[in-house]
Length: 131
Image 1 (cartoon, helix red, strand yellow):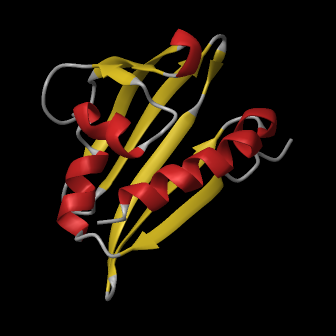
Image 2: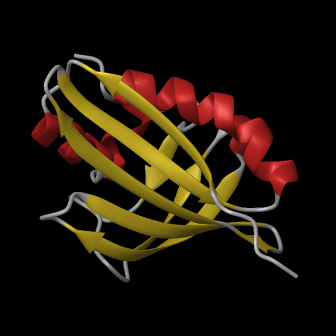
């Protein structure tokens, strides 16, 4: 059986690439640009490979996660949030653009989870790259 390609969502905006990277890799800032996140239980500071935490969403739903990799130079990171018995893999990145920056996420999950999440991710990324 052939594996499906991850679903990719991307947004471009005027925010500086370094500022976007900082917002993307600091769990304490996630709820400021991602409306689906109410809070994050994570040690203070930025993410690191092997780090663990819990994202808190609507209705008190807690989603545990493990950060798999962080590449500061390439501005890429990956994590595995777990929704019940389903492990989801999400790769994130930030790229410089002449008009500011572009942020993206690739969601490797069953389509029944990935497709409904795509519009929420799109809104969050648009807020992430806004000033």
